[in-house]
Length: 133
Image (cartoon, rainbow, N blue to C red; front, top):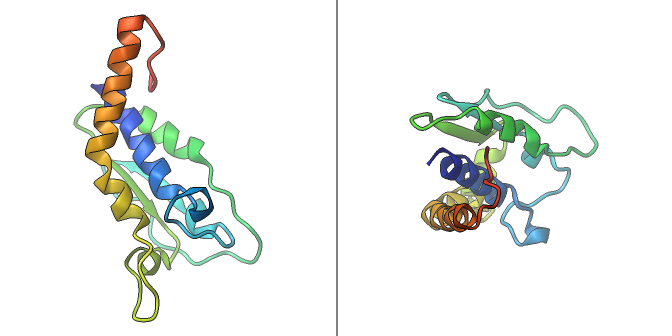
């Protein structure tokens, strides 16, 4: 169960973070919104912040993976974006349609859990490695 929980959480985050250019819903210009993605256990991620300057920004999925690796059954994994405009991108504005990257990823949770569970059952029956351990 722990392996399914952890792997499913990582896949939902990966789906939310997937750029439009790769078939996702997150528009990427400088990469700041995507790079501001932060995971935490049993509490909300840090407060919002403005972009620290010009340039491009890179998301590091290993940071979220480390948080998830410490999660156990009964923990709540939070993932959020600290970019000050994240809410506007998720829900849209009067002049901009919503991107809905978070909501559409979260809606896939049941299917992702089922898929991961099936993969893990198949691997355990064949003696293969188990993700998330």
